Image 1: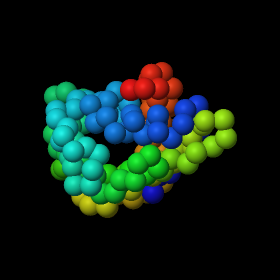
Image 2: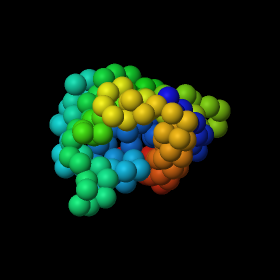
Image 3: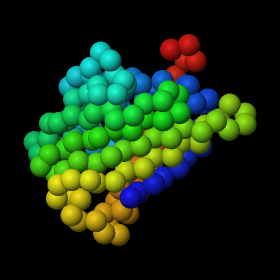
Length: 148
């Protein structure tokens, strides 16, 4: 499992507001090329975000489903990118002094070919990808108006 952490200079609700806006995923999730649709109930359990991942013309269309949501502290998704596989992705937001948030992102492939290729190289690639993902999440969360 690849786990990365980042302290974001914004309170948990402000960070979670970005997670709760499914239309922004293409802006901060590395590898997401396009968000095709977001269920009206996002991020409630069972709701889905329909996306395309990877570079055109090799991009894959699939969806991610919310498995658990405890706003503004936790969001767990099942991200599907078949035929590559499926991953469980978790975001844990812990409040820190000064209105900051520690975000821990964990990702683990649970099905498909990428699940069977669990090795240090795969973990390193996921770690680097998710580190950049949290950098982008931070950029959006810290620049978003507080009342949005």
